[in-house]
Image 1: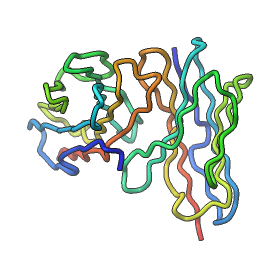
Image 2 (image 1 turned 135 degrees about the vertical axis):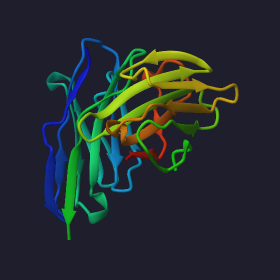
Image 3 (image 1 turned 30 degrees about the horizontal axis):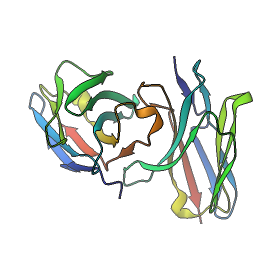
Image 4 (image 1 turned 60 degrees about the vertical axis):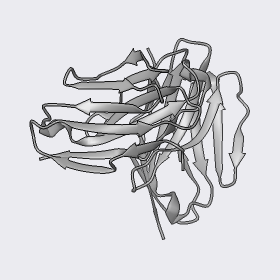
Length: 113
Length: 115
């Protein structure tokens, strides 16, 4: 069975702080994909990144970076120099084979000025 | 803009009524997915269609049904509505039948409020 755990329910930071959102996943499959989505207050789900299980290279996109570690089954997301516009709920998700996309419970990030 | 279009964006209806939510997938995408997001259940997978055929079923109630039409748009029908059906309903699409290798893009969602 697949499972995604986002233990941090809510994180509050002040603008310009760095923040890391944790994601731990469970699967018995060797081939799988991990995703991060952002849900701003307006409600839409915005795709941020997809990573396959064979590529453990970390990725950086602007102020966003992702750390994928198979040894700890983690796919953590770091926002550097956070901004108020980063305030949102962030979801980590997992899919294997032809199964459905399974989401974590989300982490609400509040960035105050 | 993900390219997935959902209508209506907001809907308020009474208990016992029936509503239809509509979704147009991204151009070229053959798979359509429906998800429900409620406060107590999080993001729950409802159903997936691929090129008009039902592909996978999740936690979809018997009062709910969906279909995908030849032009690939999809509709989610919710009937005998209850207060607990109030939620944000997402449609998503991906290019192929097997979704694992593809990014799944979500629409903006349809907010359903049952009163």
